[in-house]
View 1 (tube, helix red, strand yellow):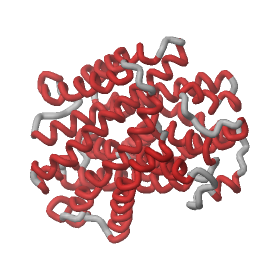
View 2: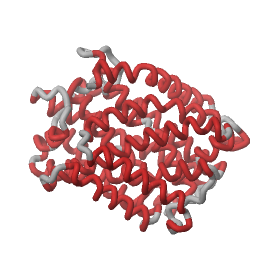
View 3: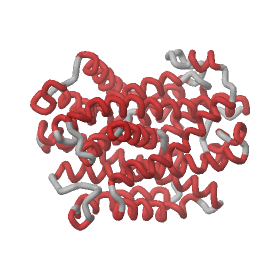
Amino acid sequence: MKKFLQISLGVVTSVGGFLEMGSMSTSAQAGAGFGYRLGWALVLGTVCIAFLAEMAGRFAAVSGHTIADGMRDRFGFKLFLWPLLATLLVNLLVLAAEIGGVCIALEFATSIGYRWWALPVAALAWLLLWKGSFGLIEKGVSLLGLVTCCFIVAALLARPDWHAVAAGLVPRQAPHDSASYWFIAVSILGACITPSLFLFYSSGAIEDKWDRRMLGANRAISAIGMGFGGTIALAVLIVAGAVLMPQGVRQVEDYHQLPLLLVPTLGMAGFVLLVLSLAIASFGATLEIALQQAYMLAQAFGWRWSEDAKPRENAGFSMTYTVSLLLAALPIVFGIDPLKVTTFSMALTAVSLPFSVFPFLVLMNDTSYVGKHANGVIANLCVILIVSLSFVLAVVTLPLEILGGS
């Protein structure tokens, strides 16, 4: 029963961390612009992050190290500095996007401009991190994130062409505007295969004191949790394709268009659920990314770190998430459109993937860390595919931003 509860709570955590401002906005843009044709990108991204999450949990449970610990130890600090800087900078931009997502939800709820909410949202996140425990962050906020299941209900009520939905799971040539099509595909993959998620996952495993007895549960958590999160993201795409396209909305360029996703099928309740989904999912992601910033820097420099310890016992750790939240809130305070920040940050995430994924592959094949639990042939092939895809994305993302991202 105890192991079942661990699996259940871990699945809830995975779902809560998967769907946030990035995946919600990119899925909506894909559905509005190209119907169901980009469903394959979501499926590929979900499979990739499920593999990476399972490996992250297995690495932590067997080696007793986080991924950042292993990278620093295996490659030395000078080489580790590159993935460290890339991850910290991209995470900061993604953190700004998530704070912006909460602010947009609050603007919908109160009619007070989103920029006025940025500092209060950052302050509330800081207070929860300062006073809360890892269990509160991991399970409390994520349980509330189950409200995002409303998109599954909306997708069923929208009565899409399920044959077209199934056809969209197979990559096909863009029907029009190829640059925009591939840019959105890149953004979806960046939103799904985010390094902060599997890096946070390994740190969380150490916080929860995982060992080899958790290997089976880890497989269930990563597969079911990420799979369910991917299903919700796919539901957003289906709703956008079934609801927005028939209304002639081919581009989601303004965050004021987001309520159109749920209102046509769920009425006023849809507006409330959209506000709750956006606020809770983005706030949960804000907490996780701010914590990951602190985990990454503390592990890089060998500081003491734990969300369960008192802040004065982890001064550097606590200072990192404090400064990260403040810096990430500033672009929103100055009025930068959160939706544009989100789109750019997802593409930039794709560019940064090789810096974190390739060293992780090396660690997962180093028997001095994982022993007999090193990657098998299938896992290696999958990660090699991810790394290769990452390099391709890194090459094409910036031109696509210029040609199709605007």
